[in-house]
Image 1 (cartoon, rainbow, N blue to C red):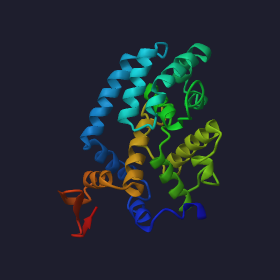
Image 2: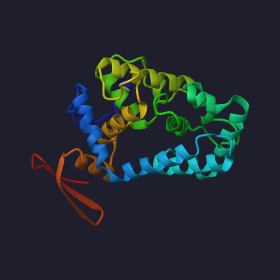
Image 3: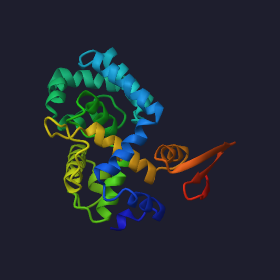
Image 4: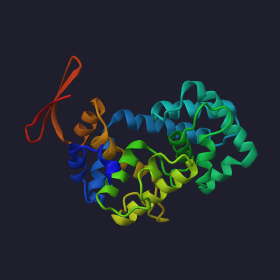
Length: 260
């Protein structure tokens, strides 16, 4: 597929190290996430916040959730839209009962939160993360790095439910794009026969667990800058890292030196 031409050879080579995506390989990714202390502490804080304020009928409480989630998850919500988003969510809740939709796992609520009200633009990624934090077993997290993983796997011949990248990355119909994304994640789990993200009791996908593994994989393969070195270090790919001024000198297990 020509649409994938921007994926570098280096990025695809990194991805190949984790294919086929077995439970064992996924566990390596989850273990790497666990040693990234900042992310773990952020998760603990957000868990406490969303458990304390589970409902969406108070603007001040919803605003707290919006601000914390946007900061910790780099969800892309502009500062000028923080208060409009909080008002938008509360108003939606009074109109269509967001709380019930979140409990039931109604995917259509994501696109409704993502746009409307006095928002200056749409926020699919933020809306999916907001819904996931209310119900991690029901709502996939729409993230650019996870999208990259899905598109790269599609390019490698993995059977997924979209034929063109724009369906999952750029479709203007946010509800359709999110549905396509979520269905692709379900197909990925089936294709690789993964068990690590499944709830042992119900067999349901715990999307937050699946997101952690795919996000680490996507950022490691397709990200850039210092954060990639941090993830590589967590994965055990880097034995030595020396920071000097704005440069990072890394030594791999094979003895290769790389300057970032």
